[in-house]
Image 1: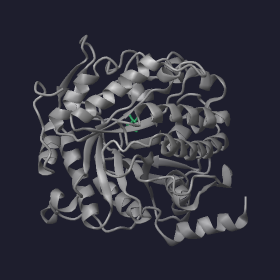
Image 2 (image 1 turned 90 degrees about the vertical axis):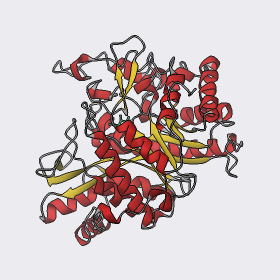
Image 3 (image 1 turned 90 degrees about the horizontal axis):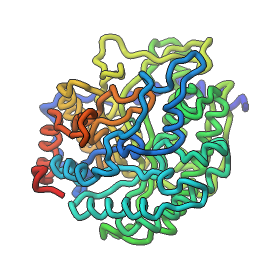
Image 4 (image 1 turned 135 degrees about the horizontal axis):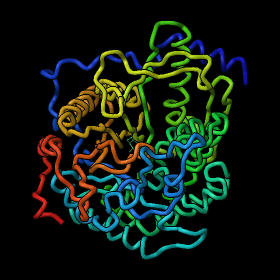
Length: 476
Ligand code: NOJ
């Protein structure tokens, strides 16, 4: 570890708040109208991921779901398994009909690597055809697909050979990307290579709560670096093998990744809280964003990581920055913890069903902060766990207002994808948290999708942008 980098980190943390001291969101009365501010072609959509909705998957997660921790606690709350999920693999047309009913003009979804390449080198053409049909259906309904190539899950054969700890995974996922680009490129322009490398690294390799259950921050940092190397390779494959401009905008591919950003606010004015909030912010938020500008992976956390590496193809590999924004954390230094800090919710603030603070201003702040990177931004996820469904309309409205305000002040925001289209398998939390614009009745054989009150809110936003919601019976 170089002393000068430590010193620089400390000084910059003290010099500036780790979260932007951007102006606060002000009164709604002065809010500009979305259609006056957002660009034509703004994407308003919803998001899902294959393992969370498709059902019937066989991958590292389906294995993990069966297991428990050494103390006997099941890996997934109440020992649940993803199982049939929302059965979207068989009910894709229903999901497209929901998107039409919302008035969405875009859908972020992922393709499941384990389904397409269940064994090393074996390709499931029938599954690939099915995805292709899905993309055609979306486009025929005026819905632009944004395809994520990897949303947390790995085929068993990749996991068995070390998963993200094996450098060969970079080549394997690049080869997978090439095949998907060739297969779907005629229908898809908008690609997202990886979903939330920082979250996968934290839960899977630092906290040991997700597969492969590793609890070693040093290994976690190596995995994050490897995932960025994989992103660079995947971006190159997409550009080389998807040469069809499906939507006729002059660009055959637009490549990015979905990056989870959080506001880390020092809990007190103590220099240690501020310094550690600064380091956490750099490691978790900033490194992935900067990688595109510098072409380097620079990860530093005291005693954990000191990585500074140039990666071929990383510089300029984002055509857009995808941001997943959910919440803010108050950071308290805690030198006894391996992460040197612990996170809490600001006192008295409202939270969602998972205890995450509802903080719409944070969306404004991250958009203003990253709007300065000179890249178009898509909010690739934003949503709340709300079983009642009663609080989601206000959540959606207020976050969209935050986005509109940021756009009116110069942030180049090109789209918003609500997480999620429907309730789904929330990883270690199982099926209890409900994030869906549509509530899923898991006990019904057809996994009935029922609108929550936020559907009307979404439709109003869509209408305001000139999009036209259609009754479900007319669609698909
Ligand atoms: C981000 C992840 O990409 C998604 O899989 C998850 O369900 C949501 N956050 C909510 O936690």
